[in-house]
Image (cartoon, rainbow, N blue to C red):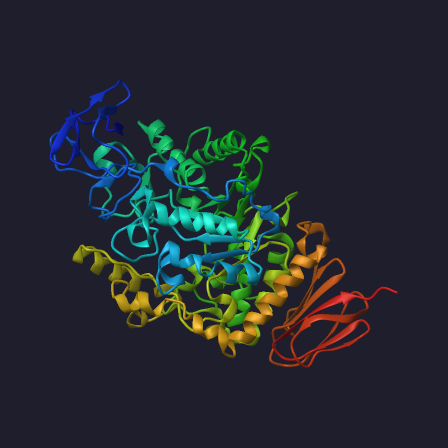
Length: 578
């Protein structure tokens, strides 16, 4: 026997449709409808009908085997045989995160095919795998940020059991796994939530339309919907952490913000299960309150992405100054990103035309996640170009050294470590031709601020755009890919074996730089990372006497407290002590 429940406060009648049978549900005072169906159980397909209308997927559907417009299927989460039940993730402060897209990571493009590459990630030195959203989204391929069935792992990737196998395999390999979730909006294709209840509000607006209703009438159950979703991924799928997409587009005027409620409930689940969990935020606000403990008036998240580090490094490596890169491009900016986390921590932003951010004070650098590539910064370019293709591999090595030896938690994007020759482009598979055409048109228009030509933007709907984005794993056996892979392995090994590079103490971070001559030296206690961004050799004074080169490129010469750097090069040195 299965219990069916659905929240539909405006409906006058609700039926659950099981095969050819319609079973009426009864309603309680809070708008929840329920019924018992004796013949239904795990594997049974079902749908809900509101006021005698067409069958619709369950808003909390655990499985959509036929896609976003199909009927739902019951899943028994207790039936899966977990083999790594005693697993506990390593501290987030010690993390080397690797972001990947299930569909483009392997030729198979499924949860189970990704398992075959876990040993490679472990040997690279990765500790945490982060997968882009997998909640059911339209079609067979996509980024996942337009998901509509938030409780159902995407059917084309392998559904619920496939995802559990991947999580279990990660834990067997000693890898933590993070899921990217989207609570700021839902996609338009297959989004039936508004038919069931007031899930959205016109009082707030996002770049994608109406905002999720977190503070209006009916918001108690809407907040419950999203909190329950987060808890499900951690409890039933054994994820170790969640990364919340664009929390600056989650609007809530309540005294207790939804994100504060969520962090508290995750902490309660942690206590109840005895398993460690963490929450990561993507935020465009440069607001340290996101990662400030709730007891001190913050939201209580464990970490947040640090876009300023990416923008500061990217603009110096590539010379780009269009769009939001107009706010960056100086050595001073990169120094601030390394020392202060936020370049814009309460100063005027020319790009925004206003003051932006708040200073970071009293927080560890381990509250911030840095990268030189991620799905947004690569995929939201006209051609999906990677940093190596834009700046050259010598300059990518500089960025990698600052990332992996810097104070923040480092994150890599799939293929970055071997300078993947494949781009990562934006791809979709909408069945509605008008929506597909609108997405393609909008994609071309949004890049105007960067000066990219519309004709240079690949059509997201064309399957060739997706195929072009799949990693070519044969590259790792050939130069220059193999050489860059060894560079990343060496940097990761150095970070993990050197206490000074694992410290999150920002008071112990020092940065010297030459704005005109384009050099920078990052000091992490007795370690120095000396970088020459220019195309001319530079001689740079050091704060200490260094005789040991830990990692470097060619043509590096160290003489006591001075280092000669070849053009576009980086060297990592250790202080000499008698």
